[in-house]
Length: 144
Image (cartoon, rainbow, N blue to C red; front, side, top):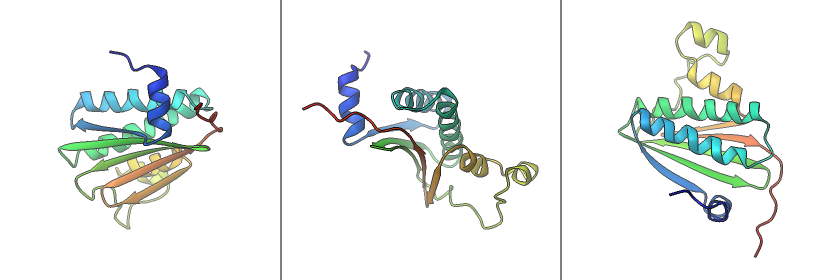
């Protein structure tokens, strides 16, 4: 059953969207579709949307490698979109030796976090949560 746009507007602009996903390819596909659909609704060009989808996909893949269940949360503010990927473990806290340079990270097999950092405006890492923030144009105020 499709979600009506009015309901989606209300959910994403108030408490956000919260989805619990299994650690399999179906869960990854749902996460990608969710982020893509919600990002399309903001003032983002296609390339920026794809950057956010790829960053979220990398974060979800990392989370799925370290936990049985992954939670993806979407929240919007007037000037930004935030995707939080949460796992049961503290897998996303990078060890101090992960290089910040994507080229060096690729050579060392540790590209995921530097790639995510390169694709979005802000990255927050705390324990089992990774937040990805993309700045975007303002939304129209909700109609009462």
